[in-house]
Image 1 (tube, one colour):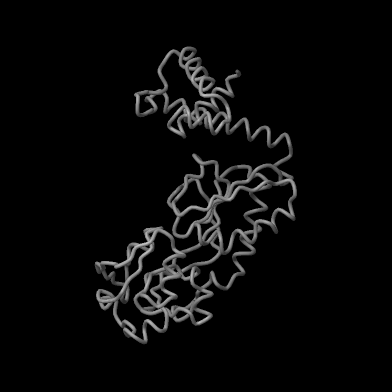
Image 2 (cartoon, one colour):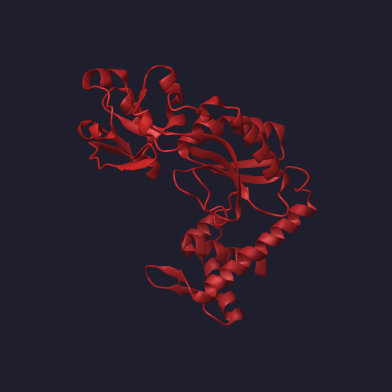
Length: 306
C-alpha cells in the first residue's frame, strides 16, 4: 500500500471517527484499515489516533498530520486534474450542496439540464438543512442563504429572500390578522426546527429589534411539513419567502406582519477561492448564476409581495 493510499485511509478514519465506518466508506476490510494506520504510526514514530473502547480522537500530532494530508492530496488531485485538462474541459465528479427545500424546488430541476450540456461531469447533490464544511466534506459549489463568514469562500449573489409569517386565509378569517408580532402570543403556531432562521422568530420596527418568546403548539423538523399544515388552516408559521412563493401566488397562504420583517437575506452561489478554478466548477457556477438570477421568486423587491 503506497503512502497516498495510507493518507486517504487516515483522512477517512478521522472524518468518520471510526475504523469500521471508514472501511465501509472506502469499501475495504476493517483489518486493512487497522494495518494501514498501524503502519503509518510505526513509520512516523508517533501516535496519530487516541483510541478507547467507545471513541477515537486525533492526537495533537494527528491533527497536524491530517491537515498536511488534506493539503498534499489536494495538490495531487489538482495536478492530476490539470494534466487531464479539467481546468479547460468540464469533467469529473462535482458535489453541490443546498438547503433541502431550496434544492428540491430550484436546484434539482437544473441538474439534468446542466448534465445534458456537459456529459463528462458526474453530479452529487447534498441537500441538507445544515451549514456544511466545503473543505472537509469535499463540496465544490454551495448554495448559501445568508451572509458568508469564511474567508476562503467566494459568493455570487443571485437573489434574496425574506423571513415571512404566513397562514391560510381561512385561519385569519376565523382568528383575525395580527397587526403586531406581540399578538402571535395567542396564535396557533406551527414552527419548523429545520433551521435557526425559522425557529428564532426575530422582528424589527423602524430599524429597532423586537424580541418575543412564543410557545408553539406544534414543532416539526421539516419546512414543507410546516407549510402543509399552515395551508390546512390550522395555524401560522414562519418560512422563507421562496418556500411559499407558489402558495401565496395561488391564494393558499397569505403573508402578514410585513412591516416587522427583518432585512432580506442574500442567496449566494459559493465556491472556494483558488488561483485555478476547475472548468466543472466554473461552468456550474455560471450556469446556476444565470438560471437562479432570472427567477422572480428569488427577487422579492418589496415587502408587500413575494
